[in-house]
Amino acid sequence: MALGDDWFVEEAPEADMALGLKVREKLADEHSAYQHIEIYETESFGRLMVIDGCVMLTDRDNFVYHEMMAHAALFTHPDPKRVAIIGGGDCGTLREVLKHPNVEHVVQIDIDEAVTRLSQQFFPELCESNVDPRAELMFRDGIRWIEDAEADSLDVIIVDSTDPVGPGEVLFTSKFYRACRRALGERGVLVQQSESPLLHTRILKKMHADLHAAGFSTTACLSFPQPTYPSGWWSATLAGPAVTEFREQDAAEKEFVTRYYTASVHRGALALPAFVAEALATA
Ligand code: AG3
Image 1 (cartoon, helix red, strand yellow):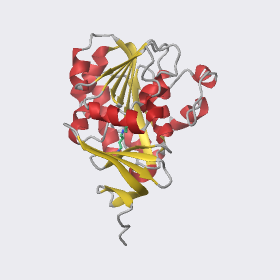
Image 2: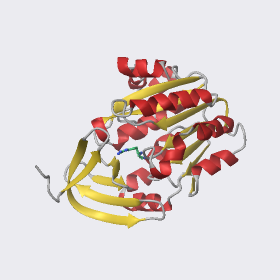
Image 3: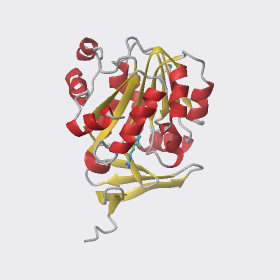
């Protein structure tokens, strides 16, 4: 039953399942100071970036994740001007944020410069907006940066992290959420990738509890398909003063192009499957 050498396989041991992509060749393999980064050319999903054995993105389906991570939060805040992205070194989320003309400054803080360098080389379209004068790229510890940020200095924080193991783990703690709460103004909105609703319900539940404990008055879970992540079903968690509502009219009238996100997709993504609602009700 082995798939053979021409397949990249990510195992999800927590669910005894695996996702495979048929690959044509390996384009890069680098052990940075923080993690193991691999780039492949696949047969049908374009290029693939893998970090520490986990799929980060493919050419074919990254638009779903990046658009949901950026636009939902930006259309939830009433007037987002100052945005910080923690992680996100491939710059896919940054590109989406910069589509909002009212955003004045976006700082991306990823600990690993190698991710951005490899993305520039192998995923140039994700990096096409890096030259935008509103964008600032920093390579350092995002948690320290948030802790040192002035109170009330940001409108939106986007946490585009890896799984809650390894370098990404500290990004899923109430200590980090308290620092985010401080850096955000009263109207501030946080959004974080929050794993698979099906496989990681417990992580989701803990996140919502930790966010409330850190002073965020409402949280919401947006779910969306992500065919190349474990279970093919993923989520983003929003936190802020009123995140179950958003600027629906503005989203419907947006003047930039998206391939997944629309006002009604946002509305629909807020609908909670019964088992998720039940898990979050007791969070
Ligand atoms: N962020 C990674 C999400 C986690 C994927 N997990 C996995 N494959 N086990 C992706 C960064 C894209 N900007």
